[in-house]
Length: 274
Length: 349
Image 1 (cartoon, each protein chain N blue to C red):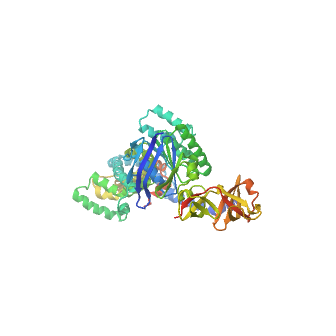
Image 2 (image 1 turned 60 degrees about the vertical axis):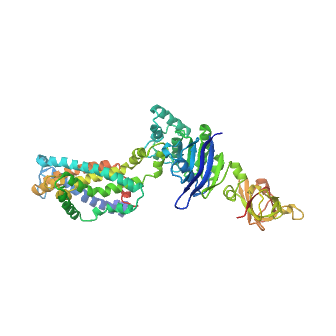
Image 3 (image 1 turned 30 degrees about the vertical axis):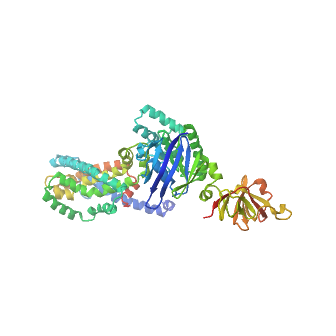
């Protein structure tokens, strides 16, 4: 045994130990979550449940507001993503291509929504929403979600547009494309990976948002994370496990899909303010 | 010969102080004309002005007799090959080439033929399905060239198209461009800072400096008779000596030539290294002989000829190109008599 450890070297052993610790900390809770979701009976010192069952899955799906909240969450996330694309992509193009005064200041101002404690921001928004009657409305919730994603949705596509050389657009003009055609056929497709990444971020962020939704949307607008609060507090932890798997599934699916588009430099260049 | 492209009084000044002023030039149909000059001389500004990528402060651009000055690039009958290829990475080679034709509403079958013809012309047959990132730099530039060629532009503009390629490839591409030009008979305007490229490719060279034109002439003419001191310095290797006007003649030491340009006072005399003759002083019994006295400093053999540096008594160092046979009679450190077969005089400024 000793010769083996000598052969692979100390560095390798340390790497292996670190990797194991990382795997346990990273995958352990997730594994526990899955086991918990499918357990019928599970008592302490046992490593695995006595009884496997779909009981809690049935229970969660039998709750009336669960199915409704899933639909609502996806609807809101879709609206938020679509609206922020419409709003932020032209802005991103302007930041990347057009010179105007105080450009950097404007670009930095998107950071402001992330500079304050979220709760304080939401409370002041709620005060404003009361006055204009946006509390307990879908539009109010959508707006709160959008505040969270404005930065990603502008910065990442700005970087994507900036990475396209002006000369590549010029050569399209040169072969006969009008400015609009150039944007549609050249600029937009070339910036698409960045825009997709930002959109996936936005969608997931909206799906996950709880604080602002809770404050602005209660009592009628109940998205998945809001329902989850009540399920966790009112029922055994297995129900919570089932629900968090439901909540995680779209995240994982979208991230895997996005991974094909995400390259490290797209991510990194999103956070350069030039 | 009909005039294909005319630029009249083109002026464009940038805030940085660079730009061009009062550019006038004409390019005949089927001609390849080179805009030559160092970086910042304004040659690219002229080309971009012709292509429609900048709005001139003043002046007019005519193509086939019609003014295009107010037209955007997509409406002009020009096409540009850029230094950085600028292929669209999200499109296959086929789509890159077909893009312009689709916009023109050409039927699909015709586009297919046009694309494969163009790829054959640039020696990349069958590359339709590849993507730009799968191609080498030289291949990408060929595709970019094909993209412009198949639009059959009235004037093809080339902005330092080969400067990003290595020397060998650059040489090949030059020959190919020349072939393509004779095959297609396209009118071309090429921008380059490489005088070899300009001399080997062009029907005519437009030598530019600091935003104005120094000389427009055929390559041989611009080499043999550079009109200004600047052109004389820029094109090829050149020796410069101090000369004095002496009545009807220009004198350098005991050598003299007729004062054809009617200059006065002190002048600069330019002599090509191939026009410098060297005679070993010992060949003359009295050690005098014809020519200016000098001493051989260095002999560099460069294959079929040699570059000889000669320290002159009063005129700095001269370079002389000598044949292999001539070198055998010369030794480093030897005293020689230098003769100058021909020269061009310029006012001393």
